[in-house]
Length: 209
Ligand SMILES: [Zn+2]
Image (cartoon, rainbow, N blue to C red; front, top):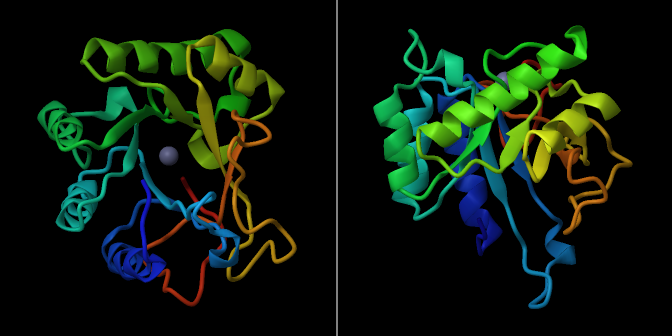
């Protein structure tokens, strides 16, 4: 998703932060880095398929924007989570559906075969529902070389981490933006995630993502 001017995305970011309890990740290259050849790009991602993400969906659509929604397929249809028809509605309106494991387990606590099941089964389920899923996000942003390899083996072409980019309250010496292409497509960096208490001027430490 590409936005100009940035002020518009900042306003939307503020509105979403006030409404959403689940995590969102924001990638904001420095305005000083932008140019006609390197346009500014912002992506907004939402994890877990929480029911209140329909609010984010509507806000995005009100501004002609699309987001990426990382889904735990076995949670879809459960209380507090989106339904299959709501996922269909996301896709119809141009939002991206990504994978986030079947049931939001911490992959680093699982044996290799269970890691593969969590990642691959989730992707296969989402594919069977008609979503061309190519992007993945690690639950709790916990990953290592083994989980990176598993995400790749399951057919994903990217995997999102959280952190390692400069944020208002942390990582002040970190780069301001992820590069395109990223140095490691299976460890895509972001600023700190956005919580319900996040304001434009302050970002809180990473919690559940
Ligand atoms: Zn999550």
